[in-house]
Image (cartoon, rainbow, N blue to C red; front, side, top):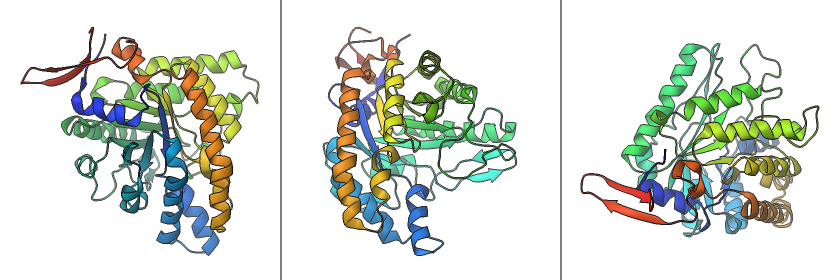
Length: 351
């Protein structure tokens, strides 16, 4: 079965990708992974706003020319970044609060106070990004709350005709080993939990347009460090791609550069259309904080060449989003706009 896209969603997807339909997107929306090291340096409970913002704006200055779209958060990156972002780049705005509710039955997500899909559309966003922590074995009440949260945002994205870019992350439950509330890849994660989560949110009633997915195995295993062979790892990526049933991109989850490159190789073989990543690209340079000159030099000498290398990989191996089986596997951006006065629908010619 092939699918049509509304005009607004089509336009947003095209804004996020390059002309060949591949996503090379930089995440600048991280909050705890940036705020926590800065706060630790100062010995304060909260990181100074000016330092967090300065780093995020530096990322825009140095890396946006290598990106097709930028993911900004409303509190730090967007207020000043909106004036800096290259208008040829897509603008994605994150909607989920970085503070989640930790309960005995699992984690529950919420929107940022005073922000909404409508507001993101009004400020010029090309897409809405939302992260939901999800474990299929969490309590039924928590699972339902996360499903309701996601569906509410998907419905709003349909109403305001803007793409919904949905990120899924598994996490340790309270009685799991390696318990942490940090935004890091779960140690010892179960591949089945990742795949079952993708299968759940691939249902049409959630309204997801693009998935932002984590590796179904740890970064170390994906990089070839472990007992699982490359063919077995690839089979898990292939299944994740099959279950997604729509265009998808990879997140880095703090993987190092070599491991993330390996992850992208597996993902592209499985039909991924690019990446939306942050820490794999800029974390090494950020390690020089509070020496701002060294941070900038690291972005220029390390992050930029790395982005160029994964962009080349993306160009040669990623599947253009409009060639996804969801859209009939059509080759090339061959669109037709159909206006029936009742429903302004966008489809590919030949549907």
